[in-house]
Image (cartoon, rainbow, N blue to C red):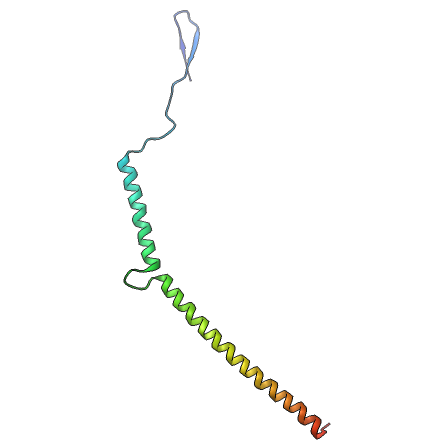
Length: 101
């Protein structure tokens, strides 16, 4: 707001309209959008990969390998636990049968 004086010396307030929106030229906006799009495209290619495997496919392959080894290890652990259980059960049965004190 600004103050202006009329012919009689009275103060009159005048509101000056100012644009609150900063105008950006279309060219600047387009350049900014294209630059951000190019960066996004580069990041997507790095993640997914175009001709070479990207980070996501490498991570998926590592995960598959870990899952396979985890399954194998689980089977081996079960077999070892079964063998230990059989050995302990046999020892208990033999102990009772032979009457060893």
